[in-house]
Amino acid sequence: MGKKIYKSINKNYENSCDGFVCKVCGKFVKQLNNGGKQRNHCPYCLTSIHVDNNKGDRQSSCKGIMEPISVWVKRNGEWAIIHRCKTCGKLSANRIAFDDNSLKLISLAMKPISSIPFPIERIIE
Image (cartoon, rainbow, N blue to C red; front, side, top):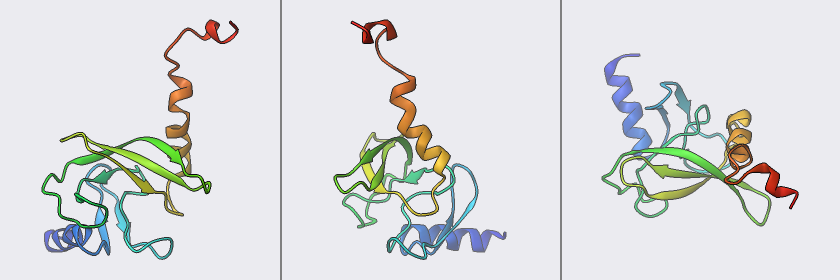
């Protein structure tokens, strides 16, 4: 992929989200075909970029890496990924997409279970 195409793809990420190259895993991410107007995270590594001050405005100057730290299950049963910006610490929630990596989503959901903050023996008490 040439430099000109790469820059064009990344510009689209900040504007219309036609496709982009993930800054973390380096994979090309296609435009969403259904389930939303804009792609807001990489379906392979679930990472996002801090581009919004307010949902969908693409006005943030931070542009930090938004790491996936957890999942949230909404009242209607829909899952969302909780992201935290590695640069400024902002938290945001993004709806999952139909093509997101299922194993990575399950791994995020299981993270609290695998890191219990107290001795397991206390569960019996």
